[in-house]
Length: 437
Image (cartoon, rainbow, N blue to C red; front, side, top):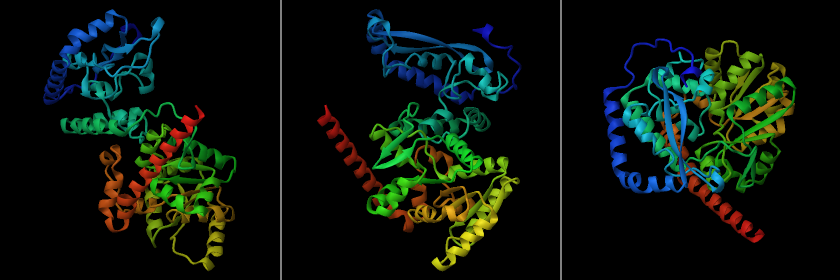
């Protein structure tokens, strides 16, 4: 393997691992191997001899660019083909944990063929020992992997601490309870009769820019469990969603629904996480933005945030969401006169989707997006949940604690209603499948 790698440069002289972390890694490896001793002594050798399982090795790049070899177990089907992975597939990694080739938490161990993706051995990720659990993997499981793996690794190295590792490990184990592999997703999914475009955040940004460049009018909606509940009792809203060009799944509830229905959701796409990335893309492309909605002064405060972070961004204008029906024609004329090409509407569901359905074309904007409470977050009026809570799908808990009077019905009642709907949908789908068989 060493011939495949460039010469390893000298990395900063820093400890590769905190002594307490190494003790913890070693202790966990010893404990797990002791618990699995009967398996190691009796079951594993037998299955290897019988050819039911086999050990598969792969080359990886360890700390400071040193080559390491890692083993895993794979099940074999008849004629030697590789079958479905076993529950014990990563068991041999405990030996790598024991001798220090791996840590419990660290950047993902990559192969030589991936080295160029990280800019070579000089990447700071190689200054620490790779791990069985990593920050990037945690965010992938939580469907909030909006940045790159390199960015997540840089964040890990920058903030690396024993306490931080415990936090990542705990969140990763918790995320495994509700997460599903989103690596093989259909391009569209249907949940509770609503058709979703199963995009990643990058896909959505690229599609928005494409619509702008080709002057295609596009209505985008984000749908979370509360929206599903509203749509079930509001025919006009349901019809409006069916007419939207793109509907994206928003929130941990939609991810859980996708897992239960075996219709995995690629990413948690929501307006709040989209906003800074959208501002960055618009600043580069030169397209302008109009913010409409929320209380007096909130849209302007959100616009000020955007201007300060993206100085090249063109904010065409702002307006609160409090206007009468008689004022609407003048408002639409104002938006049209600004020449805004992207219109963000923060009025809450279903009002924002219904308003955009009626008025997007008249406004002159090419892309209209209903963004819910986005302006409240970026104006600073409402704090957003910390990242660690978002990584375990607990942002709704934070919002409930921040605004219990407004949010209790949505979350304490609405979440259970939503799960009941999904259970009924799963049961109905199972019966239809049984009847067809």
